[in-house]
Image (cartoon, rainbow, N blue to C red; front, side, top):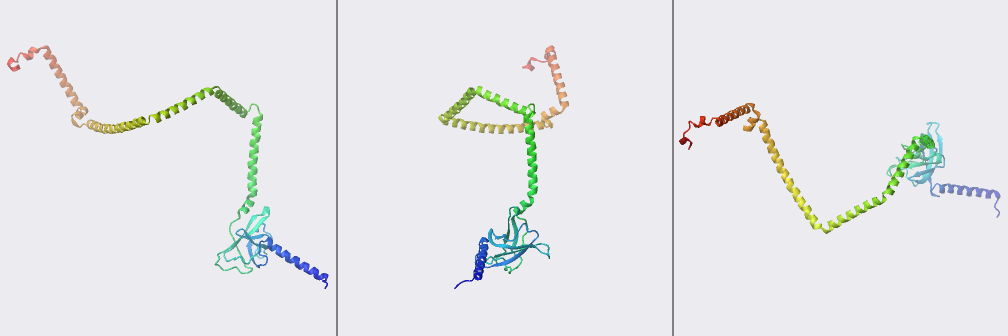
Length: 310
């Protein structure tokens, strides 16, 4: 039985179509023989989304974009896509355009709603999520970032140019500073080289002193401990004496306050000028009496009897 050319062509076309459909589903990471169902979403900006871009759920390809066009009724971007029917897209799910348009890596991310919510029917509309994708923000701010980078590079170029100019001038302050620093470093190296032996001797003496101190401490450990203990006792005794001294100082302050306030005999004597003058005049009288007694003892002794004296 001969097969006609028309039948061969028809079978070839059917086979190619099946292979094409299966290939598309394979590259979209969809089951080869499972069914899908269509959904749609409405965006203010498509962000470079085109038909054929993948639809992802949690980073897994579950479908692809069918159509992207501007609605004549709303003026917004209408996006139609299909996903694996096994994916439960319920009410509360939303879609976002993600990726970098400049790199051609744009996709439609689908965020699923609660599992117990009703399933969105065939051809239903999925809400659009709020917020911008980080890659989209980077793409949008790329011109500003490039302008800032260009400004920084211009400033760096200016600094390098001025530095080169200063280095090329023999009498510039920068070169003078470099020469001074170079001279200081050279003098320091010369000093270290000249005093190397002395520095080594000092370090050796320090090391020997440290070793001797360590040996002394280890050999006379009990004596050092006793010395420290005695020192602690002495310090404790000194603390107690200082406490007593503080109490005596407070008592003396109280006494001085009483004297300043005129309390007691000494306070009255210190604070009453009349008592001072009376005492001074009394002492003057006593001095005159003693002087007169020395000059004329008979005046006072003539009236006394020997019996009265003894």
